[in-house]
Image 1 (cartoon, rainbow, N blue to C red):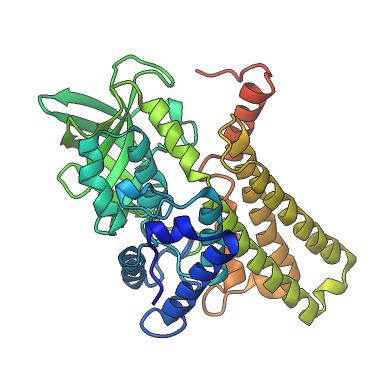
Image 2 (cartoon, rainbow, N blue to C red; image 1 turned 30 degrees about the horizontal axis):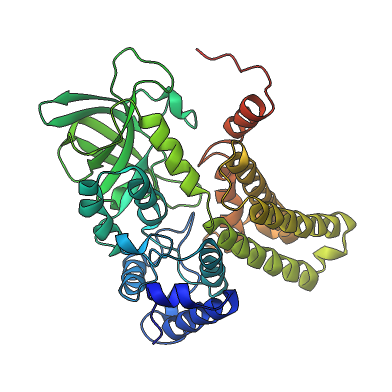
Length: 393
């Protein structure tokens, strides 16, 4: 079995050699044996699928050195270059490897702690993330704030050597299965907007934390409400200084929209190809409107990839927001196109939702979670184009 090492990533002579290494390892691991049946499982709207088995798969990734490839070698990662990270995510998607259960820890919190955490925080949390022993969720959105992170009202006060957290978060992915949550809370009473926020690491399995799953249109419940009622965490579990929460949270969001989006687009391409084949097989593509919609979807997918490659690694304001608008609206449109292609059959679930119906229903959320369309457009208009700010309370 081919295993990843820091030196193997660094010594690969060009992307082709590294791609071949990744592809061979994935084929060896998923082609037969205990993980062969996990191909294509999991992901948004389907996180309930083989969750425990996918966790074992991710631990297999970690044992073989493939779990945190973008992390520096000093922190247990592979130290892969940006090009190699893109290659890995593309090959991972091409192999239909199962969706990761520890994505939020590996791709979001881990890089945040590497960049802004203390040595003590790095030593405590990074190994458990890398080895998939602790799972994380993200405590950003609130019922009264939604995608407007600066409007959060969850509060935290320092009581001796502990922070005491009170408030509510919502749409918290996998909170019911997570060990920890990175929470944006207001730690300066009377502060407004992005001032007075702090970024806290809070254990989920304690008195004062209640998780209520939210049943979705698809029947799944991967999103949750989380209530903090006097929940506690150590005073040292703050990333950055008190009041630096906005800066730290923005850094996390920057990591959220990194190289993994190119792998996501390969998944989109596979969905579109399957839908195109279905339209051709059923004759739906004979309709000019359907044919035009399919052609437009292919063109837009190529534009999305070109934008992602052009802005890869960029930290300019608006780059992430444009990317989110592109993929979220494209994917929602794909769900609508799928219903058009299937025609009247799309209106009946017998006995359960099929994959296309589930895609249509779940993609209604794509333009909301991770930053709604309205918030993304506000950022672009105000901070990039310099247009007048929207009135805020």
